[in-house]
Length: 497
Image (cartoon, rainbow, N blue to C red; front, top):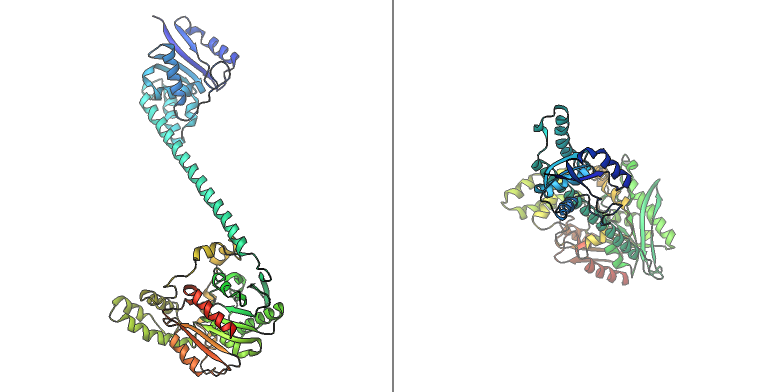
């Protein structure tokens, strides 16, 4: 009885002379076997030009269909190189169609992961050396290897899709961010929109200038802290004043966009900060062609600003303090007393109270103070913001990605040392009551970060050409963020007085 051989030997190309040579090599089989030499589908020569994926079992399915079309239930098979890989896939797809198979350097092994390749190659080498059939890989083992290989390819495909999705998200994000930055970076008609670094006492410090009408009076905004620059988001509320003021924001020495690691060894003092404030004021007045400007300070900025207004009244048409700080030691003593009323017998609160040390400022003291305010609903961000903070940060026209990296690298220890130093105490407003310019206060009635009652008492003692205080109801220290609309209305009222 004649036996039949399904033959496929090549490296992926159906060259006529190559197939002929292969048949000649195996001519000794022709006396006992009827040999079928198949042109691989999708390759040159006479089979269909349909391309099949070398991954998965498409070629195995094709070989199975060829055997069916030849009219056999099973055949003896041999193949080399790419043909060997096809036979390996055939044994996985339709093992019942293969009576026996000879694979000569099958390319299918190369598609496997290293672990899978080792599992196949080591037994093959052992069989080559010993000729013992126990080292031959069984069909089921081969099938498992190809399944593992196929699973790996599917996982790789999923990973590629995931990476593609992430790249698309990043590209869309950067595109949308660029559009938002462009829109926020536009200059109003007859207005001004600039940002720059200026020389201040041997350092580069950053300011922004924004206004809808260059003829409007100028307002210099002093952020809090000390060292807590707000340039990452403050344009969201300062631009609400830009119809009545040309607003200048300033990242003070060695913080925010003015941060310079090389300045970390510079000791901050009262005289140095006052000199910086004077220099920035003079630059702004000269650059914008004004004789005086309005000075507005929040928190530490109110402490700093009050001292500037007292020392250099000729530069300012009025001072506006918000979240007004009067004396740091008095402020912390008052906080301890009010915190006791919040805590009562709460054991967790009592533990935090024990960490307060109003006579000796430490990091532990400030951390405990902030935790107490948060726990009992008095922290500055308890009411969130009345504008979209994530969008504000993302579309900030002044911040590049490099600026954000720099922002996250700021070393706050310089300002913490300043806060705990005798130099900081020199900013105390105790006994400094004589103002030569109008004085305004805007405070929240739930602000105990800078105690609003102490600010009220200080206001009552002030002697100024004109003074007025505003108390925003149900408002904590974060009035610029949580009540920016209401704050803006008050500022507009002050502007037209």
